[in-house]
Image 1 (cartoon, rainbow, N blue to C red):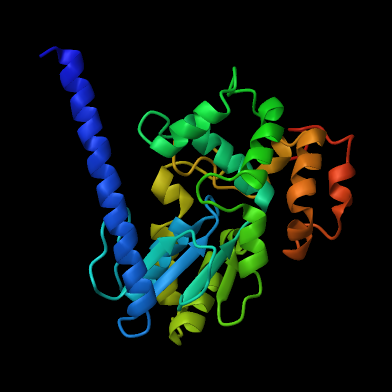
Image 2: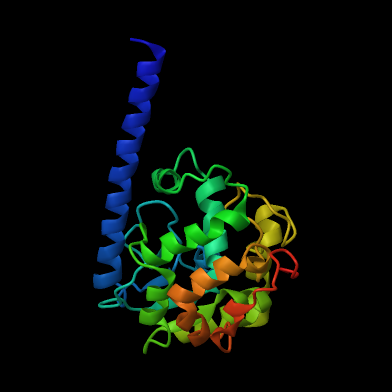
Length: 285
């Protein structure tokens, strides 16, 4: 048997094993969230991808003193789960996380074309669907990428705009914004814990958690220092201004302009007509 054949067979076996594990993990999550959420209890941090949900899960897990089974099959115990769900029926103890969709899609672009490209099947599929000649030319490529994710989403099977329409101001759901957590992580974490579990944690309990899971601590970089291959690329607010051309503004506004205004990131849709704005000319910090 040739080395190439053995290598291919091993890769196929690992891929199949990963898919089976992912399905078991997804099924177990569904059971926990829909049957045991109140009794255990189980908490769900629900987001459109690249909105800071994993970071919030880490801090909530530590603050509540329960597990956060990340990328593994969860046990039947009180825990914080992370997910991307559109349908709210039957879900309880939910934190909905929102982030400026323009920053979300810029972050998603780098995730698709620079992070885990060789090992993540979904990321590889997107790369084949939009095989840009030069992925480094983000400004030129971004309009087509935005249109794909907002008009013909692959995974999750819904767009950022759809997520906002379903979950924004939904009764019985605790909400937060990535930007608020970045600006005041301790205050937002304390509020989330109180609204979710009725526990009023003192700053002395909150502050070590915030430090432990800070961008600087997890990445060994300052916010704004880029690592394109990293799960946390920059960790900043407003990065979209460095990459959105006038065309990108128009495409995003066409598909998600109303939702951007509804969340309060813009007061109206005139931002999209700013044809004189040059990508990179505005400080993205």
